[in-house]
Image (cartoon, rainbow, N blue to C red; front, side):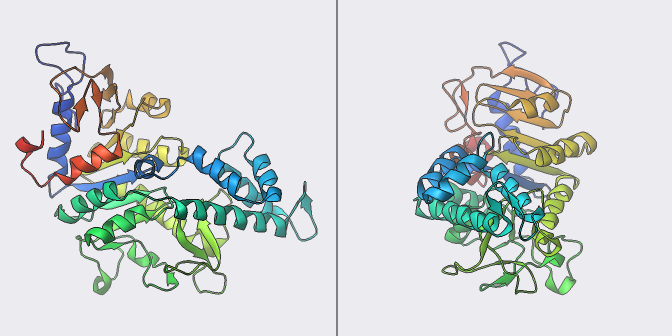
Length: 379
């Protein structure tokens, strides 16, 4: 994506990027059946549906927990976000032996604190009334685009909005687990080429890969697979979200390691276009996989859609990588060239009042939902 003249504005400043041309090219690429399409969905997409952002979530969790938990969590959050705080807590729990303490924490109390924090997180998410319209539009696109290879939706969000959207529209999907009640993870079905032929899923099944766990994942030590997906109403067991750098023990690593490896492999399949939405490039591990794919595999493209300003982490790499494109609200980086948008005619839902809108999941989902229409009607 992004030819030599894509960023030039006819009859205007040739150094500026044309939003209409870039949106048209995106529509064309996504309309090709031969393309392998991946999407990385970050927290910004859930915010578009009404769920709290990370900072808001932290405040809501603090307000919900008991005073003793609140003081301990506040200390863990000092200089850290919620994910980093949980990672630290799990490292403490892992390295303490029975009878040892780290400050006021023992091995058992650290594990109990972890459980209470995760329960509060899930309660905040469950009590928030989410607007599913964006995710229904995403699902409508996913169900109608007849790609030769499966559409893969990767997400670091642990809410169930993608799944609810797909189910509301009736789009079949596979998330790595088989079953309804305490469903085990089926690692042999994750890689398309490795799946037994008689178990192979059709390309029409969207793939939903939860890279950071999910509110319906549970740690179950008594099960053959330590992490299972549970049905609604099953609240027993610890919630498996926010994988930390201690990685759990070997049995608990399985979903996270395998799904992260699937992300790495999916990025570099030939003719792959990967779109990031609602992702702030704050996860260095994911960043490096995205940047490495763009740097080492010229037949793959990464398109970062930013809600507002372009994060420095991606701007620095996009300046030297022609197949890493970054489209922000007021500027873009195309073919390594960073410039403002050319103030051309407005395109409803794409470019309005001098702002490029596809970094907003609400507008992107509407854009995608119209992909089955002729391109001249789209823009």
